[in-house]
View 1 (cartoon, one colour):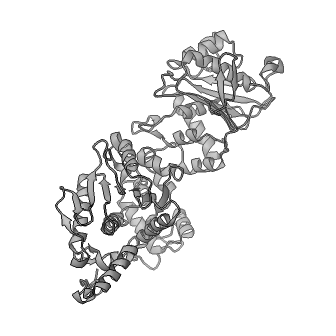
View 2 (tube, rainbow, N blue to C red):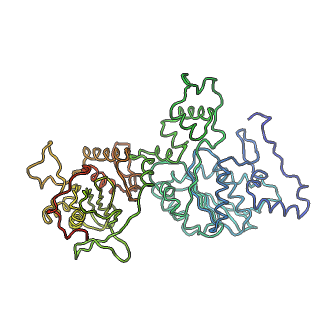
View 3 (tube, rainbow, N blue to C red):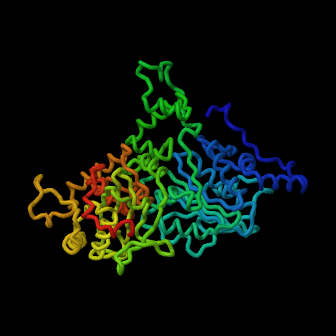
Length: 556
């Protein structure tokens, strides 16, 4: 920074506080105007290491506006989950805001958690610096705390800075403010428990604050779930794209930069960014430089996203584009019924509590053609689910059966009723491991007439019962997943179930090339949907009515 542009730092003179009324008036303004307090009393170090007033940038002002709006709302407390680009000043804002908030309140407890020890130590150092640079008349009395704790004895207020990793960070605490930094990079084994315990430790009462912030890091995990479940989980999303940072521009470019038919001609992507977000050539030039320094294009998009979709689409290796999945989510319809299987009467029926393992987005229509993809689990009440995905002739998901408490033998009976309920739909059932049990009962006991037969050497084996079902292996799995990818990309499939869409978001290609759910996530709904899509033939004539028992229609 040139010397002439440096901000001159002067501490408030003693004359400003010569009278009690002057002190009280200043304190009142500081207590109600954080931006004023920050610029006048908080000091940060510039690139030369010199103290300068903390003046809020655009991103910090926008976040402050959201905080104040939530404060002023009827509920009166703050819950925000932040998705950000790198180095936009959130740590600086956090420590100054936390200090200001505690300084003007009594009997409050604040907790700041960072992803790494060195980061938490740096944050605590920033807090200490803010306190040190405060004018004596404005500085609360500091008593001795722990290694990373500040205690204001005259206010009975404290702030503690810790590092994520240990289990149950929030257990036994009652907090009023929690600022959780880079949560997407918290230790995976404890991130969900720690995040939840800290949120619970900060009751939803007036003036309480919980702010969770991070750059993106994959399409699963505690932070990913918290961000994508907002606002249904009580949090409000805050996104700050890279171009909101004033420093992210490079004006050192030639007169022909960005001009057509020159070496500096803009790419289609750059032109779209300029048109959509109003970017300058300086910002595009900066972006080019950063992309050259990044290891991969995906790394740049994750750390400097222009949209939330950029951040998560390019974090990790998701198989299904978040952009396309978001389109599906917006077009999804609500369930029309939830049904429970009554074994005694061999029928699906509604219960008074409207709960059930079968969710219908459209009731069966006589004469329509349906396809069912069935994935089979152990039914222990833990782990994987038995899934039946139901597609109609237009590739619309009209229903889903989902249970982790049904054993494979009983599941064969449920599939028999489900298939006949949907006009004797063609059923493709995975026969790996326990799938053989469900398949055997479905075919041999119930003699279900419309089961998928896998092909061997391009011919259907004469012993068709041995070839019923789908064998998922390293050759067939990529095939059905790629077909589902293609259907999603082209908009040829409608998915209504939010669980299915969530599992599609967390379905990834591993570093070893495997296709599976992200750690801690499930992929049962994805596999069942992929199988149903695999056998889908489009509209065709239904089976002869003599194969469909009239008693199955329209009653269940």
